[in-house]
Amino acid sequence: MMTEGMQIRVLVAKPGLDGHDRGAKVIARALRDAGMEVIYTGLRQTPEQIVEAALQEDVDVIGLSCLSGAHNHLFAQVIELLKKHHAEDILVVGGGVIPEEDIPLLKAQGVKEIFTPGTGTLAVVEYIKKHALPR
Amino acid sequence: MLCLDNLRERFLQGNMRALAQSISLVEDNPELGAKLFSLLGQPQGNPRIIGVTGPPGAGKSTLTAKLALALLARGERVALLLIDPSSPFSGGAILGDRIRMHELSGLSDVYIRSLSTRGSLGGLSAATARVLRLLQHGNFSTIILETVGTGQAETDVVMAVDAVVVVAVPGLGDDIQAMKAGIMEIADVFVVNKADRDGADRTKLQIEAMLGMQEGRRVHPIQVLPTIATTGYGVAELTQALDDHFAYVEQSGELARRREKRWHKEFSAYVANILLGDFFSWANRQDIGIMANAEWGEIEVYGLAKKATAQYFTERMKRHVEED
Image 1: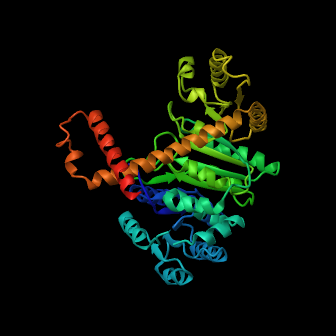
Image 2: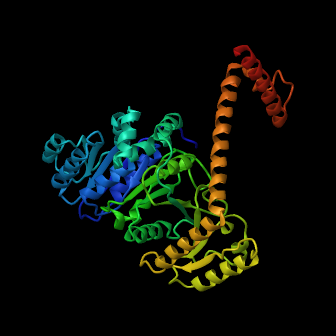
Image 3: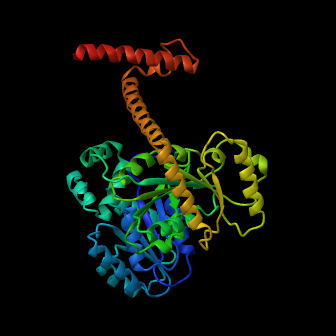
C-alpha cells in the first residue's frame, strides 16, 4: 500500500524500571494496524531519553506505559521536559496499572488521557485519531 | 501549520526540533518541501553518506550505532536515518531500529530519525533522497543510512549514498548465494557480522572468492571484515576501511561521478512525477471512455497507453500555442 501525505507518528515508550512491555507492544501493534507509524524505544527509558526521541522523531503523540507504580513521578517529568523544549503541543497519553485516584492529578499535570487495564485497543486508536493535532 | 521562514531560521540556527519538523515536511509534502529547499539554498556542508544494508536480523542497527560512536569519538557530527518497512495492508509501521541505539542517547552531536518505507519496495522510501538532501543542510560530517532488512534485490541504497556497507552473517547460504546478482554486487565494504558464530570464516571466504571473480572491474580492493557488533569487535577496522574507500573515490573522481548520477536520478524522478501528474489531471478531465478504451478501439494496454500519451502531447502542445 502506497501512502501519501501525513501519517500520525506515535512514540510508544516505557519509562522507569519495570520490565514488562507486552502491553506496550500490543498497543504498538494496534496502532500500526490502524495505519500509524509507531516508534518503539524499548524498556527502561529515562524521561530525558523519551523526550529526546520524541523530538528527533517529530512525533504527534507520546504513549507512556508504566506498570511499576512510579507513573506520577515519571509522567510528570516527561511533561516538564516537553515544556522545557517548547513541545507541549505533543499529545501525551498514558497507560498501565494506574489507580483511579491518581488519574485527576495526572490529567492536571498535562497527560491528556489514561487508559487502564481492560481498555480495548480500538478505544486507544480512536482517541489518538481524534486528538492528534494535524501538522 | 508551520511558517516556512520561521522554520528555516530555526533550522539554520541548529535547532534540533526544527530539523525534525523539516524532515516531516519534505517527507509528507514534496511541494512545501521544495519551497523549504529553495529558502535554504545550497548546503553549507559536504557530509559523507554511508549506507548500511543486509538481511533482517544481521545486526545492521547495532553495527550502525557502534560505527556512529566511533565517528563521534573522533569529533564528528553524525546523522542516522533508519528505514523500516510499512505494512502492505494498513500502511502503518513499527519503527524499531532505535531500540538498538541506546548508547547514543543523550549525546549532543548525533541526530537519529526513523522513516517508514511508505510502500516503496527497493529498501528505502520514496522520500529518502529528499531527506538525505535536507540533512546535508544540517551541519553533519557523516550521514549513515540504514536500509530495511534486505533480501537479494533491494539495491536502491547504491544510488542514494557514497559508500555501501553490506552486512552478511554466517549460515545464510553457500557460495552460489554469494555469486548471485543484486545485493552482493553493491558493496564497497563487506562485513561478516556475528563473527563469533560457527561458519563465519567460511562466509568470509565465500564472499572473498566471489569478489576474486570480478577482479579487474575495480581497482580498489573490497575488504571483507569480521565484526561482532554487540561488543564492538571489528568496528575500528570498518571505520578505517570506510576512510580508505573515501580516500580512493575522492582521488579517483568516482565520488563525483556517483554524486552526479544520483543528481540525475533524482532529477528524472521529479520530471517523471510532474509529467505523470499532469497527464492524469488531463486524463481525468477527458471522457472516462478513453481510459476504458471504448473510443480507442484498443484493448491491448501498451497500445492504449501509447495512444493516450500521443493524444495528451498533441493537446498539450495546442494548449501551449493558445496560451502564447
